[in-house]
Length: 177
Image (cartoon, rainbow, N blue to C red):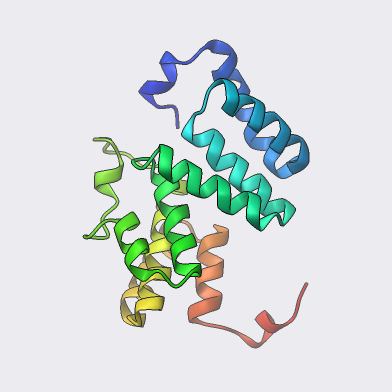
């Protein structure tokens, strides 16, 4: 989903988006090198987000963690930075930090910058983190409601499937494929 702020970027940067995004999945090592170069030149929040994802694909937990922390530090209003940071907090057992990152009301709207439309990937990232927050807080009923919403909005998203496995484990989930 193109955003108005993207029009202020150079044509070269705008044209690099699809290739860089695809590179994260296709060749994460190359993505790390390229995204680091882009960040040095133009430190866009989404470049940090993609860099963290590339580190994650590579299994580089430290690189992913450092990138998520830096993105949240630099871009605290960026929705993906908040969702990723909240997940880190929850992994560390910092439920208060996660709640702060997700917002006191657990409402996505304050992080949309006034937009009325939201991309499905934003919904998946934010509400997956909200559901994890509810699970860690011991409110499984609230987590279940979030799961039902995600199952309606983005049933094929990996976050929805991960949440299903946590809330409704099946015997087949115990075996690798």
